[in-house]
Amino acid sequence: MADDLLFYLVLLACFAVVVVLMLGLGGFAKGSGWAQKNSNKLMRYRLGAQFVAVLLIVLVIVLRRNGG
Image (cartoon, rainbow, N blue to C red; front, top):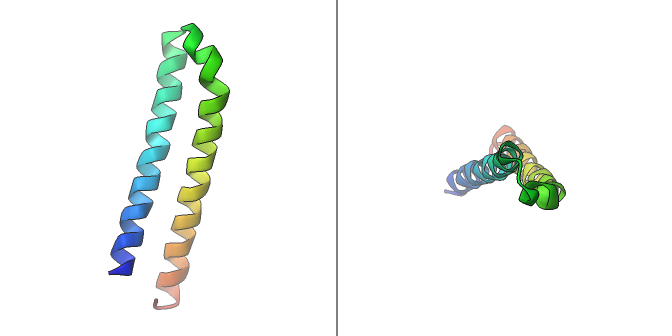
């Protein structure tokens, strides 16, 4: 059960990374003033989401390797 929960958390974290990345790319493609104001903030959010996603992936690998 815990493995399934962690797997879904990994999927959710990866989805969050994709959403933030698409928001940033959409803002740049639009070329509006909104992108200039929020690009740095979106980059920070993406890095934070990627950090959480990588930690969760490593946790799943460690738990599966140890038979947990």
